[in-house]
Amino acid sequence: GAVVSQHPSWVICKSGTSVKIECRSLDFQATTMFWYRQFPKQSLMLMATSNEGSKATYEQGVEKDKFLINHASLTLSTLTVTSAHPEDSSFYICSATETATYEQYFGPGTRLTVT
Amino acid sequence: GQQVMQIPQYQHVQEGEDFTTYCNSSTTLSNIQWYKQRPGGHPVFLIQLVKSGEVKKQKRLTFQFGEAKKNSSLHITATQTTDVGTYFCAGIDNYGQNFVFGPGTRLSVLP
Image (tube, rainbow over all chains, first blue to last red; front, side, top):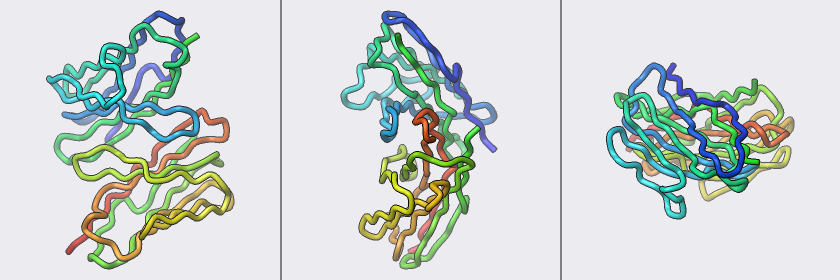
């Protein structure tokens, strides 16, 4: 079956630094990838929709200058948390929609801790 | 690691028929969430279950959390064409650290 990977699976960084998270569709092409954020025991929150070759569409309240999304190819999207602060600590999940079937597959998530 | 499975993978029903999807976790969960994704859209949060044996209803949807907190079900009574989509469950482990999605059940409703 289709697989979506995320790297890294967890990361600890210092306040003020930037962190890049990769989301890859390993065996299918994904025209659309979604980025989510999840706080402990809370529901998933959509941050942005990423379409290959175009600018990401951010949800209301999500700072696009802080959460930079790049979707340069049909198999890779990246989320960069710039100038991270402790309140950015969270679980970030991506999902990818297969171009041919419109099936959506979730990545395993990346846990970010900002100290 | 924690695994969450869902069955069936696909379900085709005639409008008016009932539908049930089952979610099973390899480990005991702290809570479980259900999402619905319409074709072309993103998953939308439906509900969260926390207590063992909990049953919650939203109109024609009934959600149940198993006594052992390892499984859950979503039942739709008298399906409508607006119910079409993929239903995902997501399990959260007891430490609140792992958040794992099931593969989803895709529901088709024939008018």
